[in-house]
Image (cartoon, rainbow over all chains, first blue to last red; front, top):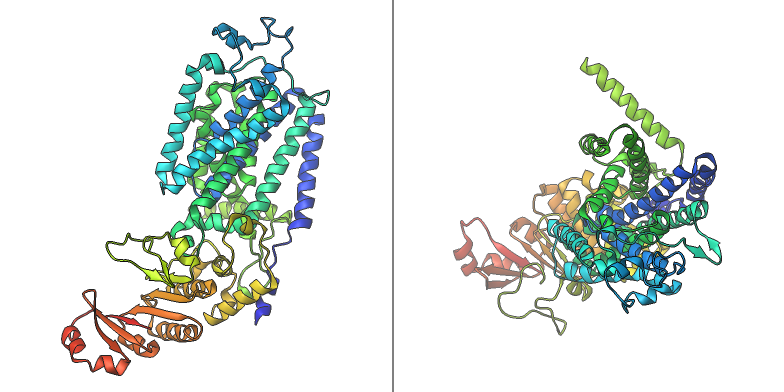
Length: 394
Length: 202
């Protein structure tokens, strides 16, 4: 009898994923040679936003915790990197010819604050980029999830965190550069190589690929199953012996660490960081990427971040009100595609892949994520259905 | 024990005080529970529901590294066979009938391999055929586990019960076999003609 379950494997994960990933990676590898410097920088930025969206998908899409604070984690990592780059400006490049960053001079600081000084060293900066957002998230998470705050209240707390930190960073001008943030930072140099333009693109491409692959691996393990169960009914899973709070704190902290790393890579590209990225508006944008891309799909939020960035880029040339276009897109998705863009390609949803069964007698068709013709089939079928429906109406 | 705070008194289990302990701690001590309404994961397959419930480590790291071993598959197949849903292993639970969902949850409790099983009206909302099948599942289960069932369907109680405790307004009214309880004058007096009889059968 147990043979019925023999078909259960952890899916055909390695081979097909690696081929698919290889092809996509190759496209992104060739891309900078085909497009200009501007597009390379834009795609670099959007890949980072994609990684940020994936990090939110882990907590929102899988675990059901809607957070507007992911921009905050991103920006905390960003500030850590910005301090590092600012403190490593050679004195000649600095406006005032002194070691102290310009905004500190303006605000009458005589000496580098003790908590910022260690960021001059690269290993400390790298640690800070990961640990500052992670520890911050861990502390918030510990209080929120251990105290059994749930649902919409968590979301309200994340909104409050975002607003409070925005205000804090603006008010502490001497330490943070205020509204302007930290500008005119040095170019990131690693092992004597200047990490700009194309080099930065490679670093970011590898980073986002690792984030996507890592998240896929993580969510396809039993952990993914547990996270989705917490999302659906957290009480039931606690009766099975799982400590729900510790799982939530874990994924929340991990997600913040990923967001922080994305923020850390954003600063060498953007050349500045400011409280704009702490604000609720930016946090909302991350939520929109996940919503449009499709919750719990990992690929979706990444694709949505890339697409919406391009939409914004072209819309900005036509009209100042690009947000209107993004807003309309959001409405269309919410109304017609409740599962987001990934809902258009039903079989590509990695959720369904967790336990594929090749056993047709079980009445279940195997989800074939990495058969590249299925997305086309899916799109074709959707188009067909639309046409048929349209005809019936007339 | 986790769902509602304890108003007064203490609950002990195998020498451990479990009054007001959190649900996951109670579960790890070997108490499997099922409440009246089916509490299953509709978005997951039957297989995944049982997999989640399997006895074992419940840590974060373990959940990431755990592999779907032969032993686990066999265990899941064994559980599915008991609840009669082996052919539905890869069906999403949302597409099952109400009765089948109840069985999935009973399967989850079996998979937990608890030393004591608490079932609250496991046949609520079932057809009479389904109720009978559920009774057979519970009878098999009671060979390996101590099973406590709260039920007021007398036919069902007759089918499964070895020992019955009759409760009335929170107090123990009578205890014994089916025949003993049915002939108990106090039980007849209190419950005759009334709608609801709470019976704990062990």
